[in-house]
Length: 293
Image 1 (cartoon, rainbow, N blue to C red):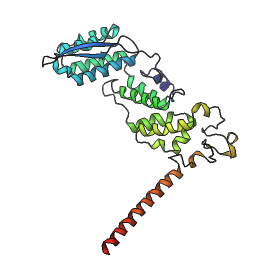
Image 2: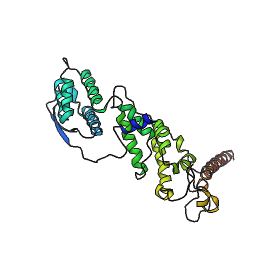
Image 3: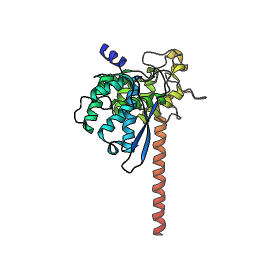
Image 4: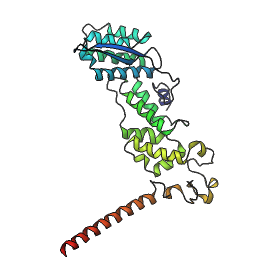
């Protein structure tokens, strides 16, 4: 457990960034084989937060795909263009790594890039980052939508953290990162709504945002609750654990017809579907009788 905590502290990306800064950009001029010169803006990195270094790598790769940079220039120029995107010790480290290559190729470039990532982020960057998103609770003041988006951004950056590094799947994000790390007060509602069975982060986020609207965490924590996260019988009328807060409703949230994940709502949807099917069959049968007559 102590090891996990230490890894979490060392994680490259956190949910709440220490300092919000707009990254500077550098303009790269690429002479295409057609004779046209493309002027491309790419994020630059100068010994700032390590997250910004990963942003540079992703941005450079995206620019390469969009403008076909590698095929437009020589490999030495390609090395140089990447170098232009860095300053300070990061550039010095790149010069040291790239300077050892006798014969440069596209393959050596990406091998050197992995070496640079290892030097800046450390050998255990991938494991540290996965420990962080698997074991860190959603920040109280961060809206659910922003939290899930940030989680997906962090997850997408993991694949840049080393040779063979892999991001988690959508299902893994739900079961390993979202479900275990939502506020304890929401876990009962989330499970009741089948949120833990969501196949995508989008599905889980929609359920959580409904819960967030109905039960703001700041208000819930002002009430007395038991260790399982449900309201105690002393804090609700009639001893109801999860009393519906809609005006005029005197039942638990799980039984509310306005809760689209409730048993009542699902039963009504099923009943409506059966009626629709019955009406369709009746109309179809009537049509047959008209034809016979």
